[in-house]
Length: 285
Image (cartoon, rainbow, N blue to C red; front, side):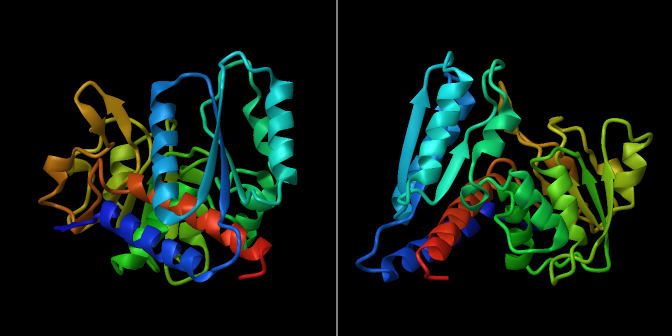
């Protein structure tokens, strides 16, 4: 079995971006603004990880840590200020937000050219039309892993288990797109799919993004399948994926571990989007 090491690939991506930034001597570095509202422990860990990755890469990261009771108007005003700030190339609002805040309104408030999460409807629409855009980070990370490990899904049956706006839907779009790491025949499964196990068994490429730890077992996967486990869940035993890793490892052709698989690629693609925005805005790309 091929163990897909997202941690090492993410490190290579960061090193490449750091070299690109270093070559632009005399100019300002890329800038990323991150909004963290409230005290959700998982979100705080994610933001700290992003700040650390930015420092290592040469990106200037500014984190706005706001109290949980921050009103909608204040958050939107702060986002607008970052839209106007020429030193900010990327804006990220860490999700989930407290219940009193309108998540969609916050996403819509971000300048699409600075939407490094790839969540703004303009970027979503451009992705669906095959136009240049800032792609959503986790699906882009999956595609990058397929490229680095030479696992093209073209002409294969791909099953995406999960239909979230963050992973499942955009990933299905990218897998079906015309290109060397697209051209798959894609089936999207979800909570109303009558027989998930049967659909999974048909897949040459299986992408798990349900958030149900250990729910996909060896009897649900065809021999020689390629499995990308995106469904990371924090449990008392640590981070767990949707795949029952031990039962799958002797049956599949390739598999991502949790942790250390797709997760590190999400931050790497966030950095790549930030550098891409910086490059375009500074006339370097």
